[in-house]
Structures are given as C-alpha cells and as structure tokens.
Length: 444
Image 1 (tube, rainbow, N blue to C red):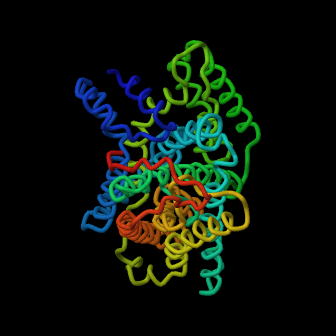
Image 2: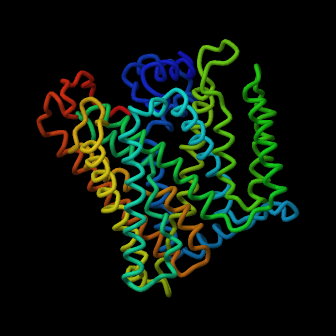
Image 3: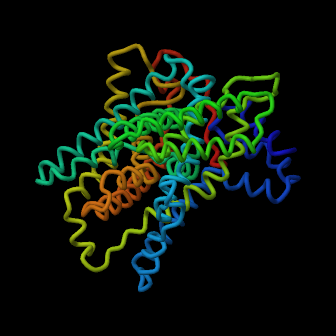
C-alpha cells in the first residue's frame, strides 16, 4: 500500500486531522519503504510532541551549559542576501521561514475543516468554537490583570502570549494518556485547535504588524493568487508551486506583515473539494506531502532556537521569576484556559440549545482545558513578537515553558482520572442515549 493509499484510508475514516487508524494499516505499512515509514512515523502525534520536547530540552541544556556562548553565537549567525532584506539570523529564519511551513499546514487544515470537516456545520461546531473563544479571552484578561496589579504596564503588549495552544503537544498528551476516553473528545479538541489557530493568526496579523509596505504586500498577494491558480490546475507542478510560494513569502516578509501569514494564505488556496475527477481532495494530498517537513523539521528547529532561555549572568532564575510577566503567563495558560473552556461551555450548554457532542460530558472538558494550556510553539512566537530585545523576553519564554509543563502534567493526571470514572449512557445530557462510543486507543 502506497503512502497516499494509507492516507486515503485515514481520511475516509475521519476528518483530515484524525490520523488514528494506525492499527488498521499496520499490516500494510510493513510493506512500505523506509522513507515512507519515516514520514509516517514523523507525522504520528506522539512523535511530533516528543520531537518538540527533545528540541526544547537540548536548547535549554546548551543555553545554560559552559558552552552557552556557542548557542548564542549560533542563534545570532546571520545569513541571506541583504539586498533583498533577507539577511536574517538563524533564529529569525526559524521563526519567519521554517514556521511558515507549519502555518501552511495550518492553512490547509483550516480550509479543509471549514469546507468539508468539523467546522462545516455551524450547529455541530458551536460548542467547541465558543469554548475556544472563551479559552482565549480569559487567559488574556488574567494576564492583563496580573501585570497591572503587579505594577508592570510595560508588559501589556504580551497579552496574547497565553492565548495560544500547541496542538502537536496537546494531541501527543491526549494520545498517550487519553486511552479509554471517547474519540469524540479528540475531535472536540481538534475543532478547538482549528479555531484557536485561526484566531491566533488574526491576532498576529492585526496586533503584531507595526507598518505595512503596501506595494510589497500587493506583490505577495499576486504571488499567492498565482499559486492558487496553479494549485487548482489539472497538473499542479511542484517546480511552479515552490518558487511562487517563496516569492509570496519573501514579499510578505518585506511588507512588514509577519511572514507566516503568507503560509496560511497559501494553504487557504488549496482545494478542499474534488477537482478534475481526482479520487481524493488536494487538502489531503498537500497535507500528506508537507506535514512530515513541518512536524519533523520546521517545528523542532524553531523550538530549538526559541526555547534556549539562558539563566546565567544578569538573567539569574531568581531575578527572572519575580518579573510580573512570569506569573501572568503561567496563570493565564494553566488557570485562564480552564476557566475559559469550562466556564464558556457550561454557560453555552445551559442557556442555549447547543450541546456537547455525543458521549462527551462537562467533566471531560477539565483535561481538555489543561491540554489547551499547552502553549509552546505559537506562544513562543508571540513572545518574540511582543518583546523583541526586551527585558521581558527571558521571563516570557521561561514562563511559557513552565506553564506548558504544568498544563501537560495536570492534563495527564486528569485524563487518567477521567478515564477511570464510570460513564453515563447520556453524557452530554441531550435526552438521547449516546450512540457513538468509540474510544481513543492511544495509537495516534
């Protein structure tokens, strides 16, 4: 069975993002080539989460070792043509360049879910959409309240740091510790993550763009439009798509809008419905083609360059931890997400006719709330946009690592607790006995 056939089996069983068909294709994948097996392994949720953790751990160890100057020198190494305004440090290339690949996958995923996936029916998507919105508003409010109460208004520009969710980490924790819980819980988390990603993209575009070069932006949009025409053509040749994507990214970077937005817009151009009589939608095909690079290279390399918080010299851990931005981010990620997700869901299901999906109860959203508190990738990106060369940068990054670790630990504990409790026949209390009781088997 070829890789694309494996993906077809996966896609036919679940939405685009649901890759939990490992057991059903294990026998077939034994016949796959080593390269295809590697691609399949890299895109597994547990693998992508582990790669992120390993990259972050290596960066932290190196940045706080006797060889920390080597890490700093590596991150600050500048490469690229200055004539094109692309003479960037390696850390900047990771944040603006490699992360655009991740955001392309996000764009493809968003397009599919809006057209053919979990967000195509507003009534079914209503509860997780509102939960995601609440899970972003409350962390931001807590952040603002804490930094103002502790007397550091200069840190207010970091209000968006605790609103983001790292879906790779979150799904890895759910896959490992959520065995025995309803599969619908995973779909709920994925729907929330899609909305979270969309809102985070809007926040980056609106609040972290200082000035815009309209001509460069226009050229970028033209390149994106041309990419869209090619990607919808009968034969979308890679040797046309890649140069157009690079041109769109370069002009977006030069325009002043964060370059990752180009990745999202390029992803949005990929058709989410069958074209030219093909057997599978191109959002599946492009996700399958690009996700291994995103999960196996782009995200880990970004994590390596972004998570290397050095706590030596003036930035001792004691001096960093007393910064108001630290408790603001940690509490925002761990507490704000819980309040936002649980509180919004409880309110929506009580005052409206909207209900949770079949087999999910309100108690199941406690671990989901903790899972959404795993910020990491997008939170680290927003911290760099919020505090470039600032005294808050180290504190913000350390807080993200602490908050993410606490949220992951609490999520793991609450997932195991929830899985051990007896489940009612009507968990979502809609008056109809639950029918879809498929369980997470941990093979994601």
